[in-house]
Image 1 (tube, one colour):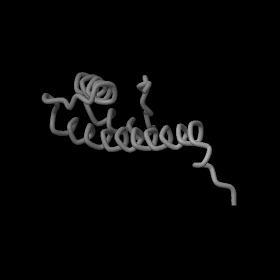
Image 2 (spheres, helix red, strand yellow):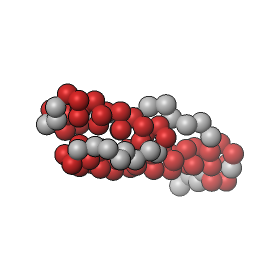
Image 3 (cartoon, rainbow, N blue to C red):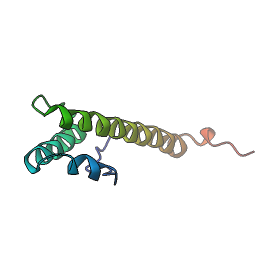
Length: 87
């Protein structure tokens, strides 16, 4: 199975980054990318950055689950024609 090489960056993340100083914002961005790519949960983030990370994590996980379900349905349609029912 191919792994996605991107994640959705929602507009409301902007507010999370604006609440942080530039150094903390950079650490948060790297943490979000690491989690999206490898599932690594950061250990050294400020309290506010960790709150923002947890919020972003929920959306990354939700998007990954949607992609997983869509991939399953797509493969089912392709490899099992009986899975497609017309009403």
